[in-house]
Length: 213
Length: 145
Image (cartoon, rainbow over all chains, first blue to last red):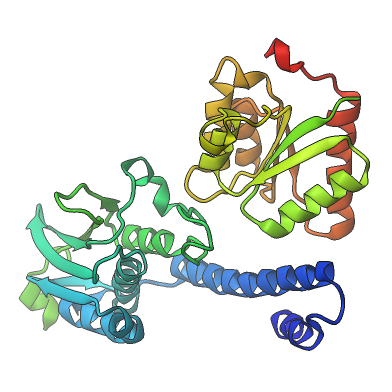
């Protein structure tokens, strides 16, 4: 509502007051729009922390496909090429895991460099857990920020460079940790960024087949 | 009274403008330079690059949440520098979290003021900062730094 009316004020009265007033109106519109996005993001963040996790046998391939469907517009617009292989079946909350892949892929597209985004997703089994990797050829993240980038509201760029509230990765971290895993950034040989996270391989005390039955 | 060189570090131009306006309106003899991120703030303080010929700030008003190098990192770097540490830094942040307040003082902040959410309190906070730091408090002179 505030955003609507400040925008209306901007449309109807721009140039009719004075320059200073136009600037105040622009700040108000900007602030209202930003606050709206912030509230949505905060609600999402708090929901992830409160909601019961519905752990089900989940095929990561289907999850990645769903995440890509949700990101269809930006994938098409950027021409991003997303490749995946060896994705496992894990015990996870489908919608939350989709959110994790969606945030990581969306970041890979958003923080692309000059080249067409190329995103690789794969997995390795290690000590009864899966280590999943999402790597890209984008602008990368300086090593000094590899930890604090997961803190809520932490941003590495000005809003003019890249919009956003700095919530996406903190949501990923919260989801993965609630699943008993961890998420981190690792160095990679090529430019870009390499996110890794772990998920328990299957239900404790059950084989994958039993869990699926 | 000589002019106080003030460095304002905040990534929100709406806050920067209002702060500058209030400081100027209160007749504080100050020249205000504002930058939007930590890297730029350090460049001003170390007089590097395009700031090579500018005056060293007498006082810094610093926001904590900045993109990239954030306010805490700027504060830590300045207070670890034997010359720059003499420049008083006021943290001016929307955060009211105890840990942000305590951490700022640990790092050597000279005062911590929470950025009020409404206009009247915002104006009064900035006015108080100006009156105290540019009026009442005695600051080191340039040659003493």
